[in-house]
Image 1 (spheres, helix red, strand yellow):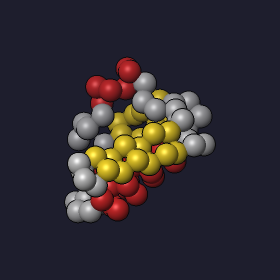
Image 2 (cartoon, rainbow, N blue to C red):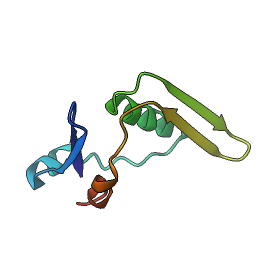
Image 3 (cartoon, rainbow, N blue to C red):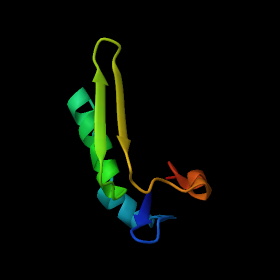
Image 4 (cartoon, one colour):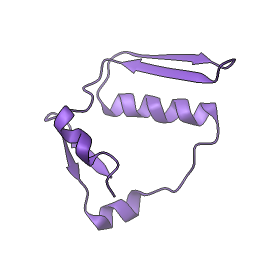
Length: 81
């Protein structure tokens, strides 16, 4: 798990104790939960505009925003436990 330092747009690994405190273990089981998680990620990225496109016939979901995103050099730590 990682955290971003708002204002500096830099990811850093979290300490093991913090990871254990925030790990929810909740699985996303609906489109609504998926949309909520993606929109919250956009808000965390300090987005001012967020658009959600849902195509239930093809089970496709796209969330676009103007947030800060993840820097290329931070991609290596994404998903690290």
